[in-house]
Length: 423
Ligand SMILES: Cc1ncc(COP(=O)(O)O)c(C=O)c1O
Image (cartoon, rainbow, N blue to C red):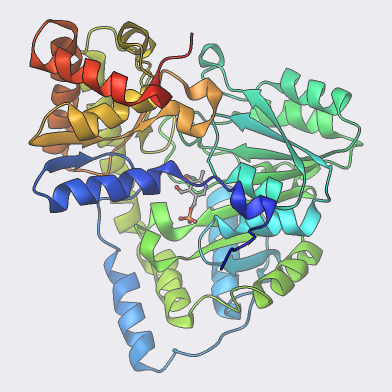
């Protein structure tokens, strides 16, 4: 059969983290010792009350369909928690439960975008924003996040977007930010509110790392009355509660939007499994102490990784204001080797050493402005984080001198023209 894929499906790009994960697991199965810092997952177990609630819910028979928007008591518990944590005044009618945060990118685009609408995306950005915008035939407009601004979005880019596009429809925001670790300040949101006043432009505010803020506090556009009416915010249990495999998240939006999300859920997922919702509700209500303890451990891991990386010659690293990612600048090394940062990342994983490897991602997997940076997550033990940085340091130095490491690098470069540093 000659499958005639749609142009959209044929051109679909996806999250590189999952591709690198597959390579890392293949190498591991073949006996290689791999330190896995490629994917944004938690090294901690799901907290105890969530686990116990899932077992109890299964035993009690919560194993069939549930309302598409989520169990009413769970939606109410989410609203109460957000009200307490971020000083909001939401009700269950503002909440839709879905399988993680990612699905709400799709639903937001399906709910609002028409072909030809322009959508502003600051990059580097989470890789699934673009496919979801393109899915609707809308036009992603990229604006760079700059190291000089600590990777915070520049309101001038929003002003230019509004001026230059005849059909500006939406802006994607993500704070705390994956991959750079930046956070939006209240002043940034105020500047955005000023520019958006009187326009029909909507915000998709992606906030999976809302509990991982290491400097200042988390600011959601939902907390500004002038932004709240134009905002859909997405949250997840994947990061704060170490529940990435349970696939549970939620969106916050005005009730008419939630009603449309109900139809989108109904016509796609039907619902999130009720025993998963019961587990997530228990996490919200009973596992906050465990969550806070795990967040403290993440903060310590991020600090450790930054300290270790800052010892490496030619590597510039900034302490992230949030998230469990560190985003060091290795442009000097990339230029010296003639390799893109993802080329360097794959060399560290596959070819630098036969017995050992480190898995991470090149910043360009998140957009052109990420070129020359690496994204390392903290999803391993402290000892292995330190080991990973030593491995990177040794590899960089050895690849510069004449010897087997340098030969490996030359060979790697010859075999992978797609990884050549752009001239
Ligand atoms: C910025 C961002 N958005 C969305 C997601 C997806 O979260 P979930 O696993 O809850 O779908 C992630 C996960 O890494 C993320 O980093």
